[in-house]
Structures are given as C-alpha cells and as structure tokens.
Image (cartoon, helix red, strand yellow):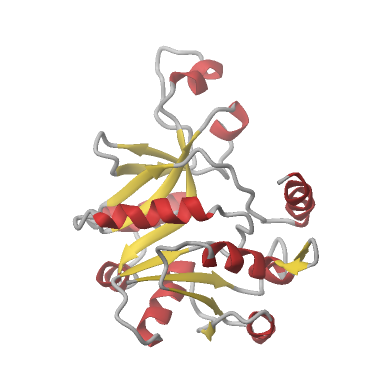
Length: 247
C-alpha cells in the first residue's frame, strides 16, 4: 500500500504561516490535500506538522493530521516520524510538498508508478529546462540522469557544462532537467536514509538527496511535462492566485 504524507511547518523565514495562506478562499494546505486525494494509487493521505494552527485547519476541512517534532530539519525526517506512528502496512511513502497547491494528480500517479519496478528505492520527478533564467538560477536544482533514468547528480549549478558551446545556447542542447521536490521512498529505505549523517556534498549544495546518492542509494527519475507553481514567498502567492484563475 502507498501512503502520501504532506509535511508542513508554520515557521518560514521567507513566508511565515505559508500553509494557511488563502488561495481563492482555501488554505494552501487544503488545496495540496485535495489534489493528493484525487490520486487513485494512494491508500491514505496524512498531513504532518509541528504546529497546532495547521492541525486545526486540517481538522476543519476533514483531513487526517499527525503532530510531529519541531526538531526535524527536512520533510523527509518528518515523513519518517509519521511512518513510525501510523497504523497500516505501507510499503511506499510519497512525500508531497506542502507548498505545491497545484500539484497534478497525474504527477503523483507517475511517481507511484515508479515503484512497480521492485528495484526502485527512491523516486522523484524532473522536468525539461527550456529557459535560460531557469538554467542559470541557483534556486532551480538541476539533475543529470543516467540512461536508465537513475539520477547521477543534483546541483544548483548549470550541469552538464558544455565546454565548446556558448552558454546562451546550452538550454537548446536538450539534456537539462530541473528537479521537482516530490519524492517517493520504499519504507525501509526512508527509515535508513534519515539515519545517515550529513556529508560534505550535501553541505556544499544544501541538497539532502546528495547524502543519499553518496551512500549508495539509487534515485529513479521520471519526466513530467506538467508545470506547477510552488509557493516560497508572498509574491509567489500572487502568482498562484493568477494561476488558479487561469486553470
């Protein structure tokens, strides 16, 4: 069975209270939850938070919520606490970002489908980069993948580097992908990766998935063509309102 967890926290340096921000009259966390509930492959959806205000909001719209520690450094750690508490025999955990109110059910289904392959340990989504402002933006995480779809490396830099091509033309080369922050894990793999110590590559790039790769875990990637909007700032919320109106 597959469990989806939406890890969210109230505190945010750039946008405090973000999960409760209203998008056309609904809290953002409710919109994420509603999108997740449309996925037929999911057997259960749980919101994981460390804040009673978010807990109250989830209860109000009828979702299931679990209070977790405020000491977690990542959504992955929050997911691991939930899987240790929840009843039921779940073999796969899907980590859906709480700041993705327009995540497509098809994207979650695509991620779930990666686990039809029994060798898949961790899976995530990527999308083709088509604009230079994405390619050279350090806030957009790039990924290089192997022929079999496994991730080779994640970076905030523009990788791979085309030595003999002017940088403005790199985006036309067709091999650049950005990482979308939605993960799936086998239960036993999730339990293992949260016990790993932070390493130098993770510290350098501030990307937790590098900890997993350098410890020998494989991350399968699946390509999506669907575009969503993640909410990191109040300005993003304004874009989200416009995006919702145009959908």
